[in-house]
Image (cartoon, rainbow, N blue to C red):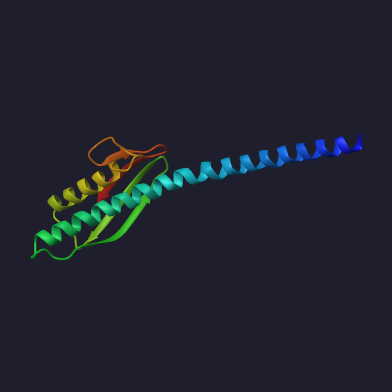
Length: 131
């Protein structure tokens, strides 16, 4: 009887260890998923803005070289992504950059457009501002 008890004990320990591993994986996944969404949103917005800046500069030789100098994301459930370009641009170019950023974000499968400069993901709502 002692041999059967040892085998039963190993099975219980294995089930406990596997259960604890599943709990740890779930905790890590629930923390990492929102962070991955934020990273995807900011990366796509920056990529879209950079592409439009390049296109504007390439199509207009007299245009002064412009670059993204700062990008911030603030907010809790509603995130605001602010893209700052230098030197400052006329509003028509800012609207083109905003459109390019939104197009790049919406091409990501996680996001859906909710307005001219707003979109939502699985965990947050976002707004893009070009300065």
